[in-house]
Image 1 (cartoon, helix red, strand yellow):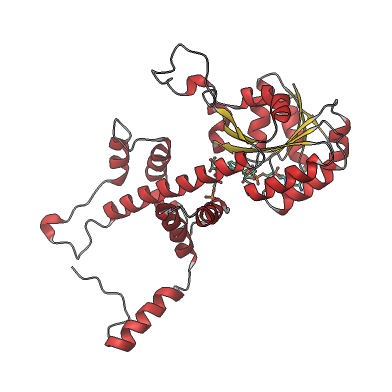
Image 2 (image 1 turned 90 degrees about the vertical axis):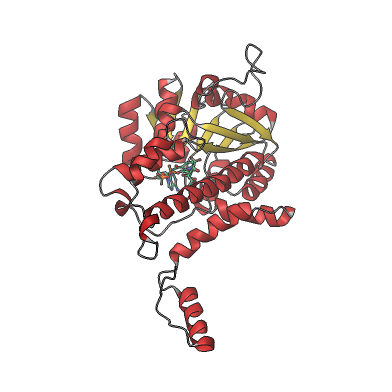
Length: 330
Ligand SMILES: NC(=O)c1ccc[n+]([C@@H]2O[C@H](COP(=O)([O-])OP(=O)(O)OC[C@H]3O[C@@H](n4cnc5c(N)ncnc54)[C@H](O)[C@@H]3O)[C@@H](O)[C@H]2O)c1
Ligand SMILES: O=C(O)[C@H](O)[C@@H](O)[C@H](O)[C@H](O)COP(=O)(O)O
């Protein structure tokens, strides 16, 4: 089908490549014109110089996919786009937007007769080949309009073995790698929780490998002091272990390449999904201690001056005369 695509960076560029390969006619726009020109030359997409021209090049009812940074930029693009589109057209936000914003956007756009789909998109840089896991919120008509695009972007049923209970039967929801999760906001809600889980799994791997790295610390008695080969442990776990996974594969690759972990920053950033997951947990009264801990571990990594830890050392020193310099005990 024909689709407008806005945002041609790490995600959008590859999604246009996958869609073009799948036979869709993509009309593309990015605020960096060189991205559109290069992608058009590579894929046969049609690059537009601005949003007005992008919309003018599409036949109604139009479908336009956004893959731009969440927050103000997404809002700005939706505001401009909604003034250019007509009733019956569909806007899909595939970025990592806060589901609460998506609920509000769907309501505002519905007043103009526009469909709005919030589409949590997972798969990162590997989605081009592996496909993108898509979590969609919005009305049935919008989902029906964009269905061919979801079918092409998603990994497809063959990406995982079918469950024995379903094998041989008709495809069940989710099995194709895309899912209409519910009304507006539901897609970004599911993606938010997905990312909260992602934080927790990543944190558990990080903590485990940190233990391996310090198993030969001087505080450990010699007979229990081990010099572990971290890349080799990752390799052995990748084969048949209970924790084998794509995230472990990526961790193994990081450990094995270049200077290993020394190539990466000790400061860990976040894009907001973990914070929003905790907001939802607090609102719903659901305990999510692993996700909370994983988020706070990232915050701790930002504390360059170590204010909180220096404060702790200061208090220990004041009340007990304890040394303020870190000393490890057995
Ligand atoms: N990188 C990932 O692994 C990943 C995975 C899933 C979802 N996401 C989400 O997808 C979205 C895009 O992420 P990305 O990693 O591709 O980002 P990116 O920074 O690589 O690309 C952003 C694109 O948006 C364009 N853009 C920025 N402002 C614009 C504007 N005002 N008008 C038009 N185009 C504009 C940029 O020029 C660029 O082409 C974000 O919401 C992100 O959270 C990213
Ligand atoms: O499913 C995915 O493809 C990833 O989760 C993707 O969405 C992105 O890489 C994260 O948003 C990073 O999130 P943080 O910046 O919060 O770690």
